[in-house]
Amino acid sequence: MNFSERIYAPGPTPVPESARLTLAETNTYHRTDVFSEVIEDVSGGLADLLDVDWPVLPLAASGTGAMQAAVNNTVSSAETAFVIESGKFGERWSRMLRERGAQVVTHEVPWGESLDPAAVREALGEHPEVDVVFSTLVETSTLVRHPIEELGNLLDEDHLLVVDAISGFVAESFSPEEASADLVVLGGQKGLMAPPGIAAVAVSPRVLERSRSL
Image 1 (tube, rainbow, N blue to C red):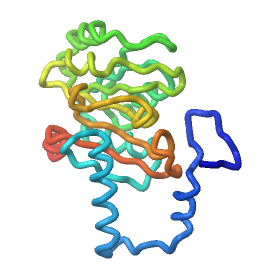
Image 2: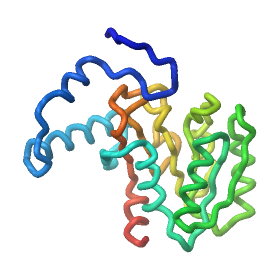
Image 3: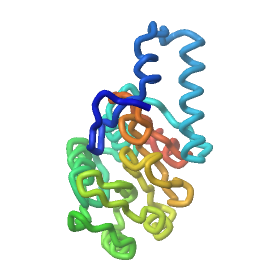
Image 4: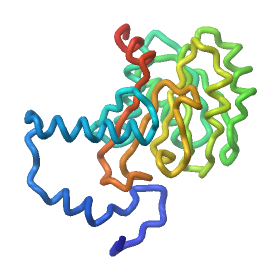
């Protein structure tokens, strides 16, 4: 795999030649059976990579767009969300939720350190009004991989766990089921080495049920 320019950054990553050549092909009309088959194939492939039976919904958006979809379908403007802030992208969760109109309880982790699952659970105990917890898998701005699996297994069953796995997906071993995660946000421009502007959300049955009431 040869690249004319090597990018040493968290993303966008270099796009393989085969993907760039595919972009040069004629577009497929989005109301055709062929397009539907492509979307179904992509969704199934992403579900296989995550090892889940949930719907994985591809989006014509950046990772930020997928994060926005996650916020809008898990928290209403009248509710309170819990956000683990450990860097720029944890802070992005908080900003989006406030723009949504929700109340936000933040659990701040020093930049460069990973979260302490027991401390998060203790902080949640002080906020019984919280139903949804937001975190990152890998905090790109500090290069820290959080122990999401330990966190998810400490949460009560009445808490939903939303994980930004944009920079960690494929690059890090991660199983939503092992982490008891309920919604996972994916981005194409990192480990998948796809062009920027492609994202996806993997949604559990619990999230689908909750989204109907928002």
